[in-house]
Picture 1 (spheres, rainbow, N blue to C red):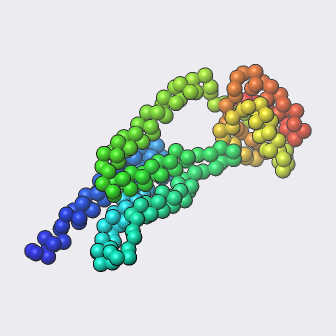
Picture 2 (picture 1 turned 120 degrees about the vertical axis):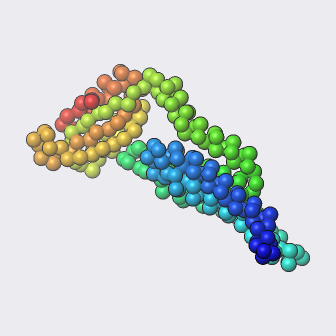
Picture 3 (picture 1 turned 180 degrees about the vertical axis):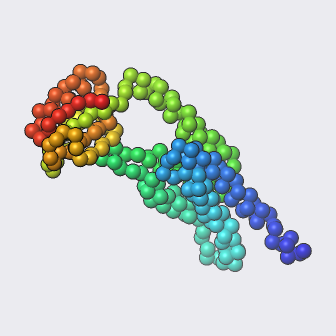
Length: 237
């Protein structure tokens, strides 16, 4: 009984509660990512938050005995381990970023992983209110601000598809992208496949999801694309 009481001391209870709390907050953010089928979901966010919390707990409690025994020459800074977590988590976040042609996906998920690591560090150090408040901000931004952005910032803009049948030369896609950029057309996605519908051998079908600044730019851009020597057909869907 005495051994059990010695084991369940204040530090042990604090460590366990903080790890559970970190798992809960990280899991809350992960549920939203999992529900929307993003590259990193529930388990990833939970593990990142718990891991960051554990590192912070290690920095605070893991070296107490050593420091007490070597007070005369030990100079220990707990924030150093936290700094390594903040910089190291970027490698994991980079793994969630997917590049498709000239479009990039996964940046929001990478950011949420980075923030979850910060939440874990804050819980590990005992800043419960900061961790809870940050989790609330993250959930609001992921769920509600996405709808606000679509409503207000993209109200007058609609993503359209332009299809280009062209010869598979090395500079074909580069020439297409250059024309779009010159006309301030935003490219959201690029898909390339063999063209089996035109009856011409060795043609590729480029389908691009784009965002035109206005209707006049759309007409001008399509006309310039059609003037490319390797292009056989251009149309919008």
